[in-house]
Length: 329
Image 1 (cartoon, helix red, strand yellow):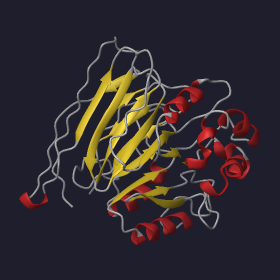
Image 2 (cartoon, rainbow, N blue to C red):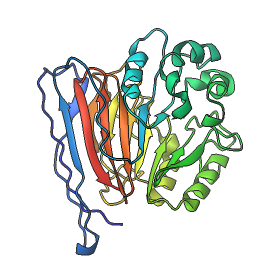
Image 3 (cartoon, helix red, strand yellow):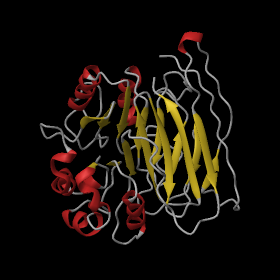
Image 4 (cartoon, rainbow, N blue to C red):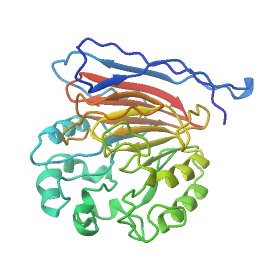
């Protein structure tokens, strides 16, 4: 469907600029619409403020399902995974991971010693994605051994999908040189599976999760290898993509696989590499980047309504937040 929207990003800074670690873009955008297809305008808010005495989870406002998580999570040499785990403790719902679950090599020992004491408490409600560090152990054996069938399709592939409420959730493996012959291309086993899965889904709203982002202003930058994912998802009208890999938080305007703004059919991408591993500064700002921050670890919470979604990026200290809502295509 065509979407009419009003995009407003408000930013309040009460601290000095933090050496390039925080950047916020603000502006107004409107897409054309016919009177019969007008939709509620998406609302957005982002803020930076002084840390409070503690951070509590945003209150639940409805019975709609919640998807919460991040990527780049557990390192025994870093305490932040335990801190982001405390955030998830207060948020009921399904947990996602966006790859790089256990550092530095994704071994069985690192999953047992680093991931399990922190995010492992949510294992029963977690559906993960694999990252490049998980593949530092051959065949991602530590990752697959830890998560088991929660990390695979019914036939044992490292990509899969499931339904959550009225939404369809797709989890892909963007470690294109590690997966079966063909990598991430449209003719690869994964590409063919994705096309069939999208065709079979009857859901209006869809979110896809994997590790390496197609678009990123972080150190790694854009990853062209996952463009075939974007091509298929955009053609099918998918609404949201969630990635990790760059150790920061970034939200993009809805856009096409080539990076053109598209407020009617575009996919909104979130980079959430803030689960616990050390944060990094940004590289070159990419077009359509709405907001960027690498000032605190945190998790992304999506509340999945039947025809739209709310997002909230919740940080450990409360020094930064980002929230908004949008209607599905």
